[in-house]
Amino acid sequence: MLKVENIDVYYGKVQALYDVCFEVGENEIVSIIGSNGAGKSTLMKTIMGVNKPAKGTIEFNGEQIGSVKTNLIVGKRLVYIPEGREVFPKMSVKDNLVMGAYSRKYSSAEMNRKLEEMFEIYPRLKERQSQLAGSMSGGEQQMLAIARGLMSEPKMVMYDEPSLGLSPLIVDEMFETIVKVKQTMKIPVVIVEQNAFMAMSISDRTYILENGHMKGSGASKELMDSPEIKKAYLGG
Amino acid sequence: MSDKYKKILMVLIPLMIAIAMPLIVTDNYFRGIFIMTLIYIIVVLGLNFITGLTGQMNLGTAGIFAMGSYTTALLSTKLGISPWLTIIGSIIMGLIIGVGLGYPSLRVQGVYLALTTIGFGEIVRILISNFKFTNGIMGIRDIPAFTIGSFSFDDKLARYYLYLVFVVIMGVVAYRITNSKWGRLFKAIRDNYEAVQAVGVDIAKPKVLAFTLAAIYGCVAGSLYAVHMEFITPSVYTFDLSTTFIVMMMLGGIGSVPGCILGAVVCTILPELLRDFGNWYWIIFSILVLLVILFRPNGIISFLKTRKKSVKEGVK
Image (cartoon, rainbow over all chains, first blue to last red; front, side):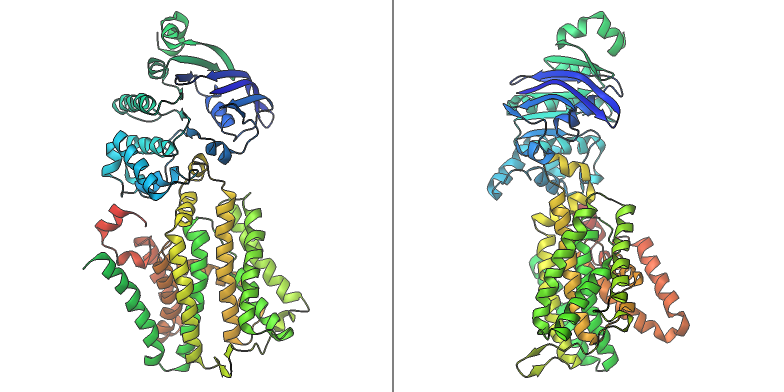
């Protein structure tokens, strides 16, 4: 579905990614783990066309998207859920969701059906649909950000740090819904996380990013058993 | 009372007051103030698109207003074009300003955008003060009134009702846009720039659109102003005027069409009513404005909404 090959990315003169390759197949959950500053968000932003790769290619659904503008990439139904609950705080929950369908030209019947679908996955949002998004708790806002991304019926979703700043209890719930969404929509999912344990425990495969280099990859189960990974990312 | 009923009353009552006002207050000076109020309402409705909804600070509204005034003044006095047609000229001017000011402003945000727009306003003022064809600081005189056949709107009462028609039309359009897909998009840009991009919006288009709407409203109001005053000079279109428009919007209710109308009315008429306080009137007015902004950040209009509703329903 997504194929990133040998990309180099620079911020001005500073190189952030070195010869990074990674791949996502149909219907799988892939996690990318790494510490602060490893280049995880840079990689996401490059795929979404915010940063342009200096070298290498990005292919999504059989199309080259390395030099396509961000809004058009969303139009190709590759959806990115940004880190840090990027909702529209002074708009109602419902309006937030409607904004998510911007790239699709839904009729009002389709829009209502889509909204109902989201409310089914996140019943909390239904209760609060006329409330201002900014007045909800952090976890609810994160769910709203995810639901808004899903409104456009994506062919693939990428989550950037969905657990950022949430309480451990909510984090569990968050990951459960991510799996649930994947199962119902049958689309591949990429999760970028610092919370390596959570990300690896729900994903099929994992890539490890360190200082802008892809350090390794493999089936999540095997990686979780490897002593090296345990030491570096799972706290012993 | 049902919501729909309430809504109709909310429109009808202010409209009745607006129609009755110049008949109750027959003083010519005050009728002039009422006409100014109508003109300012149109400017503030326009400013609301860019600053109120889209959240892009525009401190150059006086420049836009001036361009509209001078378009009408020059076309009607130098080329003898009917004032009605100069309004179309003004709308075209608004389009040009909107695109011309909108595209460069895509690269700047926040304080820098505010500075850019101040720059725009000042450049316009300095240019019209120095160009020969705008007659420099002497301004342009003898701008003709609107006429239909042999009937001329040179009487203040007739002109008031004509301008009221403009306000109603432009108010309805503004309200429809605010509550449409466009309005939602504008608010989304104000709320969260990055998230808008994440849902697949090309930010440039709606931003330029908001600028263009603001410029068209400002230019049309400028035209109406020129025709009303019959004589315009560059000294009117100062930075002071731009900030006054911002105050009107903030005081009435930023982002809300009824709020903007209320703000323009209060800010134009209240200082006149306070004139009895002599030299103190401006200080009293300023303190009132400060109090509203401190305690009612959503403007006077928020007094009309019950607290519970405004929290639950949010900004609509």
